Image (cartoon, rainbow, N blue to C red; front, side):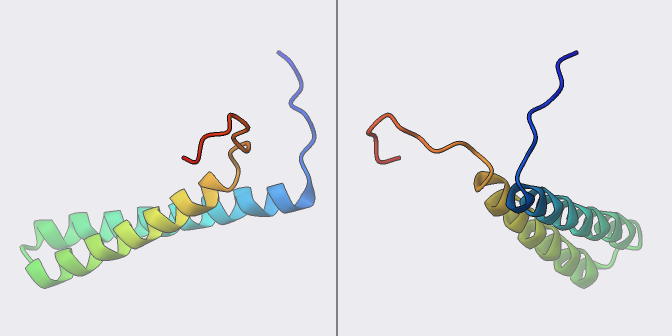
Amino acid sequence: MAVPAPISPTTSLMFDAVAEAAAVAESYVRAAGEFALARDTRGLCYALRGAAAALMTANTAAQALRPAQHDGGGR
């Protein structure tokens, strides 16, 4: 197995941010499951909104880790 290339301290912090946001999303998802079992609509919706927000945060941080596009396209 090849040894991965070393990463910069900034990149390491970005990975930490993704991991933290994913852990928050996991907590909200677990709560959503509990609220669903308890038939608590208000709590369920609250937990799902929290999970969605945490996943969006994780996704935004993860996108910053992607290599820059050098194909001239504006996507």
